[in-house]
Structures are given as structure tokens and as C-alpha cells.
Length: 162
Figure 1 (cartoon, rainbow, N blue to C red):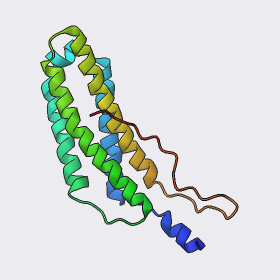
Figure 2: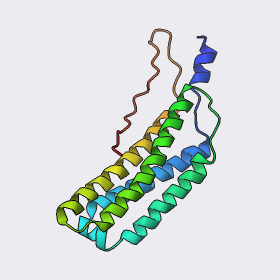
Figure 3: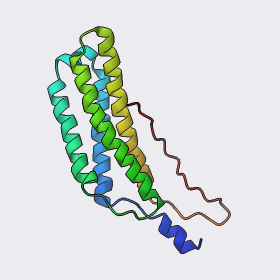
Figure 4: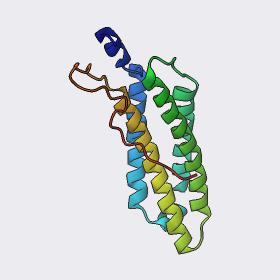
């Protein structure tokens, strides 16, 4: 592979506006995660749930509009990975809404705690996926001929349970 091909394969896979969207999306998810972890299961079930359900719905709509409906053409091998992660984020957002409804409907304290933990874990996963995309989108310096080629940037991608 010549040096021009190496540089071309390392170009950013996301537009600037898409990167900005992911930064804001990740920040909002992180704030919601922090807030959810700081609340007790009962407080979430009783009080602020309407606002959170609206926020989850807004996040889903924004993600649908800014990412799913505006797919960018595949530019390089990282584009396929980004698209796979975007699909996972979309799936996690749908499951997040379901988890929240389960949390809201739980009545017994052990069930409330379990649903609260699942909800927080799902938020953490969505945040990690968003951050993984941002990490993949960072321009990479071309590899020197003495360094072995690596096709897998160090990005931790969470696994979630359906």
C-alpha cells in the first residue's frame, strides 16, 4: 500500500456536523446517566420519570433524524464499523425506552433496584457507543513503514444484553 493510500484510508469517517452531534449526544447521555445513578429507584419511579421519558424520546428522534435518516456514504473500512455502532446505538435507545417503562411499572423494591440498574447500564452502553464513534472519527496519523499495520483502533465497545 503506498503512502497516499495509507493517508486516504485514515481520513475522518464523519462530517464535522456529525462529530458535533455525537459530542452533544454523548454529553446528554452522560448527564442523564449521572442523574439516573444519583437517584434512588423509588425516586425515579415516582418523580422525574415523565421528563426522562420525554428526553429518551427526544434522543431517539434526534438520532433517527441526524444519523439514521442522514447516512453518509461509506468512505473507508472504518465507515462500516461506524455504521455498525450506529445501528447498536439505535437498538440500545429503543431498549432504553423499554427499560424505563419496566422501571416505571416495577413495584417491589428488589425489582425496582434491578430495573434501575438495567436502565443505568443501558445508558452507560449508549454513551460508550457514542464515544467509540467519536474515537474512530479522530484523524489517525499515517503509520511509518517500520510499524506494523493495525486495522483495529483501541476503542472499547460495550456489550449489551437485549
